[in-house]
Length: 337
Ligand code: PEP
Ligand code: MN
Image 1 (spheres, protein in one colour):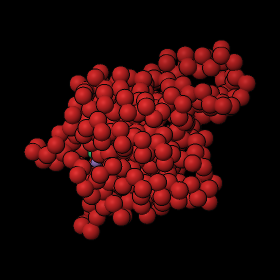
Image 2 (cartoon, rainbow, N blue to C red):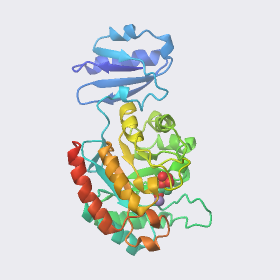
Image 3 (tube, rainbow, N blue to C red):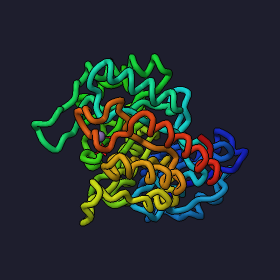
Image 4 (cartoon, rainbow, N blue to C red):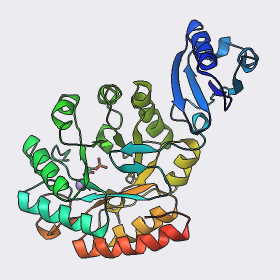
């Protein structure tokens, strides 16, 4: 259930409701909005009468949350969530772009990629150092050396960093270098990893699994949120269907669906979503038009020689042109870039 406090509710009134919920066996998650404080209670909701809370001092209204995910539900924060990562805000009308190579490969490659994406207006630099490859014989990533290279290049170009964490044992090593920890499609239901990420204070970019429903994606987000980490960004990256013309089927409808069901920011990754450079561009445009809060796009200075995902990586000039087009689309749908 959740309790919305009145605009002028005092700290004592808020604490009174929290205490009562705790007495009844609830775990309480407090979120302070611009106007209202909202208290999300996870517990034996079937045993309580909402009216008992509605009459408490300082309470505006209270409701049961009917969805299986509670803290991820838009009911809890109808106005949406803004996640602040250093000087970048995610979840505002401004569309945020994360771009960079699939994998961190060499200092020269990282530098060229970071310079290019920064020049075109991306705010966040992506790159994998721990790579989840379908084959054990494929390039597996540079590990901590790659993270370091990535951080140095990002700092030279005033970019934040996002990189994939594949295992809880890697979290500690990533924290000094990485601003946003990415959970890949293959790990969306790695509940041990999700629980661990719930206990740290670092934003998480949670990608949809290749055969996961939207409800399962939101339940995975719930694992991180219920651990106490409120900074979760969701990402559609294509799902597996019977279609073989593209690497995955980019489910753009997930964007408005998630925006309705959840208050969390929703991103789109048309690179993994389509697997082909020429298809990334139209799907990136469509994702912004569909209401995505941001994009994750693979850009490589020399995609023909990339160690992973070259076919779906944009060349810097293509990325620059895409960003120019996205600015116009964003404006047309009431967003900015
Ligand atoms: C990636 O972003 O490089 C990646 C491996 O993505 P996904 O987990 O969506 O396949
Ligand atoms: Mn990739």
